[in-house]
Image (spheres, rainbow, N blue to C red):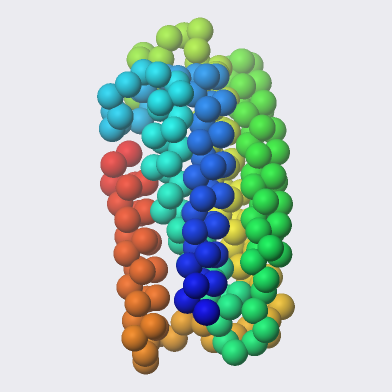
Length: 204
């Protein structure tokens, strides 16, 4: 039963992250498609805002959502203590996504205004490629995405810490796993972390 619950939590967090990413990018791709076609390497050969939003919405959030799900499952279900019900975790994830959306919206307005007032500008690597009339929107979208990542990572860390402390700080992952399940969890965490780091930093 524990494995089933863990799988449900991982799936829930992954699907929630992907859904947010796709909806998020459906908006930003229409605000400034150049952020995706010029600001990113051309992994997806299309200029369609809808297709780009779907592709990048999945690619940018799948690993992070899965990682959040794995850690949430560890802190909310293990340790021999009463498990946190999945509906409660779902509500917490929804609140986190709502905070991310609000923060991203405010950051986008700030980025647009800062660019419009020439306080900040498009990075030199993209300045000549992005049409001048789209610079303000490019920076707005840049700020939107940056805020979503920062608030999402900080908020997820806070959520995990809060659940872990509320359950009496259970030992969820030893430095050296002593069981097959522990080894599997450690390998999954390591693989997901490496994939996220490679995808987000090695390619951009």
